[in-house]
Image (cartoon, rainbow, N blue to C red; front, side, top):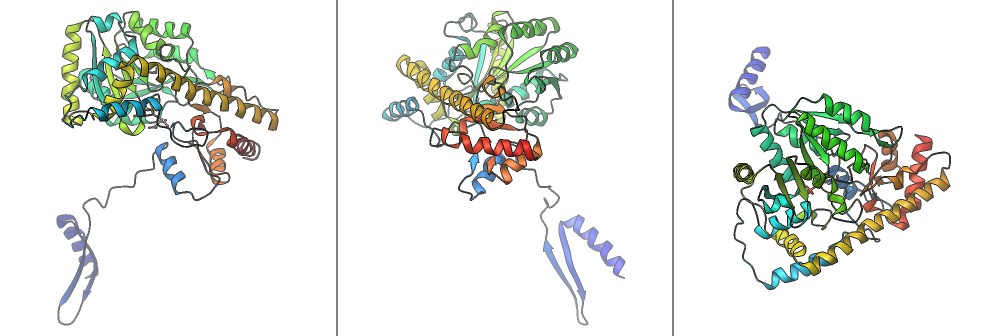
Length: 438
Ligand code: PLA
């Protein structure tokens, strides 16, 4: 009897989506207590995001000494978020014009699209003049990568996307969620704490013709290690020989050297060699527009006709993903880049941000050298951009967080944009304790 009931329970549960949690018989009637069960009861809990989950954990901590070196978001010397002065000025101009909130076109705000190409290729570049650069404003770097991934899934069917090992963790999700196959290429050599150039070249040589290669435009995340100009040239040659499509992720233009043009060296080199490229651009870090979601996907192509067709398809993809991009951040970026006075001022502010990060890099290295002289800490100032890839193991990272309240990603990356001089000593002590005792 009991067995029959439990069978029936299962059948009913499956058929009508209710879970009979308690069945009892009484003399007068059969009492069925049913509890409605969600049709999503089988949805498993997703793990926290390896980067943004760190910010959540940081916010939840009540420790007064907590330090967030997880997400790559710039902070000032008081560790407060920064709104750039040029952004405030641009906003004042925008507000004074009392503009409307109409939809933008699918491809985005025209002055922003122009500004974005100027920034990437340099104003007056032949590819811009010849109209062979397709550009669609999208939802910052991530959204632009995702539109690019959707384009690859649809028009380069079956191609594999090669991403560096290691890379920004979301690359795997972005391509994977679009059903695009991805593989790693070697990038980082822990022995030298530098680029594994030989491994990189070997892996890309072995990649099937027509594969896509994701390259970080500058300030590689998480390693802070970039190819030299000569190495970039060799990678460009290889892409040409093997018919590989370079897909540049430009999320830190201005943060590697403090100079926008120098930081665009690699994509410009590839374009000048006649390669077709895809590029995702983000204004999150260099203009500090994180939450405004400002960025673009660019395709630099052989001719105008191809660019027109590709843009039409990018618009088709974006229409179904989010329809059209947000206005406010694009207006800010366009205002800054297209106004020569604000543009110069922005460059100064960017040098200020890059300079502050460079200064704390030096301070951290010196503090570690003083406390732990038997270890080579020179990698800290050799690495560039926002991050330092410390080599701390996951269990050492756990010690950093659990014992010292230093929040960082488990791959051992720390964001130096979240460090100030006052906290250098504290951080160095935590690192030394973790390295020595774990
Ligand atoms: N590409 C790379 C290489 C990045 O590091 C990031 C951001 C993005 C794209 C996307 O940024 P966007 O969508 O805001 O334009 N990486 C951060 C934040 C700063 C994050 O993980 O989203 C990081 O801490 O790695």
